[in-house]
Structure formats: structure tokens, C-alpha cells
Image 1 (tube, rainbow, N blue to C red):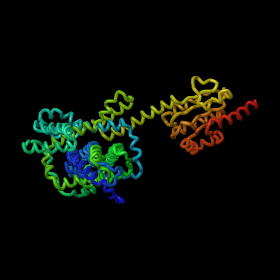
Image 2 (cartoon, rainbow, N blue to C red):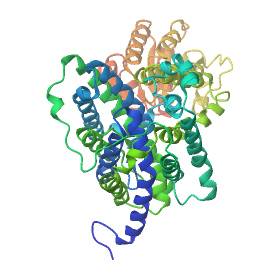
Image 3 (tube, rainbow, N blue to C red):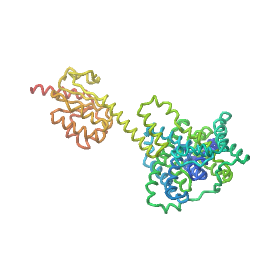
Image 4 (cartoon, one colour):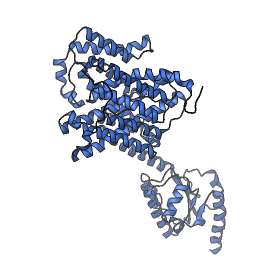
Length: 556
């Protein structure tokens, strides 16, 4: 039986996929909530809001969304700053809610203006270095809770305070934390039917409870439906505006990248195609609502999404059910979560941190281009020990500059020129052979390769500085120049102006649409290159040259 809106054949799979994804998400939501500094309930609120709304309004049919490692690390960094500005979490709630709300609105805006199609251009070394840095942050910040101690708020603090780890550790905490890690890694060897993180959470929490171990617990968390946290929105100091804007933007960009990477993974498994911009709108709605109810923001969760698909989930209903399952847990089992030991959550998050680290990227560091390896390592170090915002910004700038240099170098090597009388080792293109016997001494041909942009223009202008006085005609092959920027445009204009003063006629062959539009926009065509000197192919040039140069010889 089918309806216009939903094929009921998918219902069983969507229910099973959603429930299993919810089971996988539960321990992570609690752990990420604690790590954020807002408490376990904030992780649960975020998982519910983002899980339901991103699935309902997003563009990936099988996506399971909720708090993720990268989003939590950025959120935790920001929350610590907000608390330092206001003195307490309660006083900081206005700033926190405003930031998470604005971050969601930014994502919605990204989707509306079609920015989803540009996220894919983030260089892999930047993403790899950032994600690995996030993984190391999670690991480092969980070392102290794993040992039964309160954790410093930064990775630098972890290193500075390392002596306390060895003098004040709690052996019971280390014991149950270690047991959690063992179950996390070993239980899948027995069966993968039940998520190992959930088995570890329940089993070790029960052991700690019945043995009455003296370890830190999550403590009471609110039960029932969440309420809106909008009171503090109207009492934000002006000095916090820049921080709000800064972190809202980085959360929006990171959440978009995180979600769309997971969407691609879902596409590869299901052989479908997600809608990037709709996905960003759905994620934005989820994160905005999560912020309004005091939850931490999230993104598409790779593990939850894969589990959902493998358990039968086929439509967005599976993601909605995943969020509804967590809502049922909140309403019915919230008080039980109070007995979960903090070292158990640390034992779950430490393997999660290792899973985020891009082991593949590290293995290939010696084999990839050196520039890419340097970018990855720099982004990794800045992410782990500095600012996540600066890490992404510096990484993108470095990668872009290095890419432009490589592009310029390739263009320089590929660009060549020769007179027909003296090829100097240069091989003419097939359609240029016909010119050789006819016009050996008076024609110069210039082959251009790739975009004419600011990274190449300096070399480009040098190519034309010292041309032989015998040259009467310059042929510029534009067949392989797909793009020209403003710097390249002005460089071409200056070059053509100098050539015209020398009495050299310039011919363009194969001019593509974007460069032609640019040349016409500032009147290079027809002022410096008349329409009659624009040719589509060499055959037409040959006919024109034969007529033109024969006429010149007759005059002489």
C-alpha cells in the first residue's frame, strides 16, 4: 500500500533504523553534553531537536543528525569564553542561546543562497587537519575525567596541569573508564546487533552503582519537555556581539561541512543523491531550535547515519524516529541517567576521538605533495593547541596560496611561444603545420594554458617584453584559457597596448566565453583587438594571413 507522501513498504525499516540510530546516539548525546560544559541534558536536547527537524526538513533521506565531536568542541570552547565573560553558565545563557540560534540562521541562509555547492571546495588537508585536531582535543580533554578529575578547559591547560593527573588520580575511575574502553572495542567482535557504546554505558554504570564506587556522576538532569531559553536574549552586553557573530559563523560553516560530508557517505551507501542546500536549511532549523531550548548544536552524524541505513532506514522518517526515540528516553528515563559515572562517558568519548582522527591522512603524509602535508600539520597543531577559527582560516588561505602558486607554475611551464622559422624544440599544434612553409619569419605563436589570473600575470607579461622586431603578427591561442580575473585582464590590456605601439597585429584564436565577456566589458575588444582579428580556428587564420601578408609583400 502506498500514499502520495509515503510508501508504507518502508515503514518497518524506517522504524528499526530510527530506533537503532537513537540507541547509538544516546550515550554520545549525554557525553557530548557533559563535554560542552552545559551538562548532559543539553546534549540530549540538541540530539532531539536536530535529530527530528534536520530529518524532517533536510535534503538527505537517511541522515541521522545530532551533536558531533567537531561541533561539540567548538561549542565547548565558546561556552567557556561566554562563562568567563559573564561569571557563570546561568548568566551566559543569553550569549549562548543567541550564538546557537544565529548559527542555525546562518545555515538556513547558506542553503537559500546555494552555498552548499561551494562547501565541496574546502581542501582535504584543511578538513583532515581540522578533524584530526578535534579528535585530539576530545582525547586530551577526556584524560582527566577518565582519571576521576575535573578537566582543564583547554588542551594547553591539560599539558600545564599534567602533574595533578599523576598525584590525584582516582583508581576506581580509571578502572571503570578502562573497562568502558575495552567493552567499546571488544563487544563488536561478539555481535554488532547492539551498539557497543550503549552496552558499555549500561554495563559499567550498573557495576559502579552496585559496587558503590566513589566516582563523579552526571547527577540529576531535568525530566519532561524542555522550555524556551529566550529570557537572556534581551540582556546581552554589546561587547559580546563580535564573539556571538564569530562563533555563530564558525559553527554554521563547520556544521555545514560536517553534515554534507556525511550526506556524501549516505549517497555512496544508498546510491542516491542528496540535496545540499535543502540539507543546510534542515540542519539550520534544527540547530536554531536546539539553541532556543538550551541544547547544543549538531550536524549529520556519520555513525548514526550508517547504522540507520544498515538497519533498514530508507526515508527521512527514520531520522525523525531517531529523534523521537531520544525524546521518549528523556521523558521516561531521565532520572536513571543521573547515576552514569563521568569516567564512563570519558571511556566512550576517547575512542570516539580516535575515530575522528584521520589515520589515512597521516599514513600518506610522506607520499602526498609536501605543500599539502605542511597545510595538514599546521591546521592540526593550530586546531589542537590554538584557535579552531584561526585554524580553518589559516588553512584555507595557505592551501589557496599554494594552489595558486602551483597553478601559476603549471601555466608558466605550459605556456610557450615560437616563431615558425625557429621552433626551439617547441612542437606546433597539428593545425599550425600548414603555416610553417608560408610564413616562417614574420609570425609568432603564443600558446596559453589554464586560467589567466594574478598568480600567472607577472610571467605572462615577461613573455612579450622582448619580441623580435621582425615579427609583424602575433597569434595568441586562447583555446585553453577558460577564465581570466581582473589582474589578468589588465595585464592583457597593457600587453596589447604595448604591442599595438610597436605595430604588431595580435590575433586571438578560440577565445572562450568568459574571457571574451571580460575583454568586451572594458573594450579591449574592439579597441585593441578588432573584431576581424578574432578567429574560431586556425583554418580561418590561414586564409586571412595568406591574403594579408601577400598584400604586404606586393607593397614592398
